[in-house]
Image (cartoon, rainbow, N blue to C red; front, side):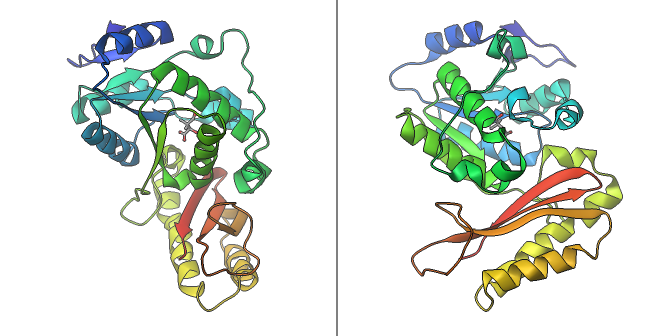
Length: 292
Ligand code: PAF
């Protein structure tokens, strides 16, 4: 542990797991709870809303800041992922200085072996993000499991923007009997509707404005959902995206929220969700909306 001093910021930051584990075991009692918000940094209001929920529901809150190399299938994406630890620490400190920050090095997490373990998420991993980012969810499963073992949270908070990730983490917890409650939290949006994401920082002001089209499309999809088939909606989405040259639609899928399988025939008792991934000037953005 060290006291971090940046413009008079003084808060607990751990950059090694051994020190964090020792600190948590010293402060945690049988009556206390640990809330956990795992992040890859470049914090925005969406992350702060997860922290807000965690601090309001738990005795202690731990926020991890770690750009996990094993979940990036594209080396260029890993290289360009924003790393803004000083600003992140300042934001957390201003928000709530009692939050415990865990910002480990790659070596501290992986030792010499920077690789992911293979996971079976009952097929959830084969849809959408899993199809287009091979190995991504093995990387997510590996790091989230390692972080859960270090932090030993009572409850962990994940944003619903990464809905597939949320379902996968819930599946991992269930299959491994991990003693953690996994909570999904509402998507935070910029004023124009664009889902908040650390990647938005890489967009130009013009593209950031243009990217609001993604959410507007999802809102129209929700309108159409009661009157159109999934095939008709897919066709409509593909068609409208061909008209914007700076956008490249990677996938659009309406899926069962539980299995994440593409919707074939609507069943009244099931809940469905639209998922989308779009490159905006080579920056990959994802979003999702619940449909019923
Ligand atoms: O959603 C993220 O930021 C990451 O996938 C997570 C959960 C922190 C694991 O690296």
